[in-house]
Length: 86
Image (cartoon, rainbow, N blue to C red; front, top):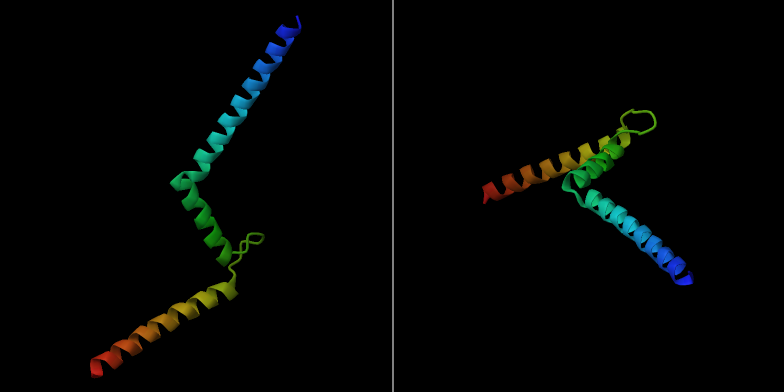
């Protein structure tokens, strides 16, 4: 009888472990799905420019990004003009 109890306990433990592993594998598959990764990254970028609590634009980060883009454009224009004078 003791062996039967021990065997049934082991079988339950094995089944629980299988279920946990299956759940872990499902989570890994979901997390590594390219669509899921893209969705998370899009949400992260959106969180930089929109306040998640109010839904209002985060003007400070928008201004920083616009300034950086403008700076790069001015740099390229300046470099192009300098290289065309040579």
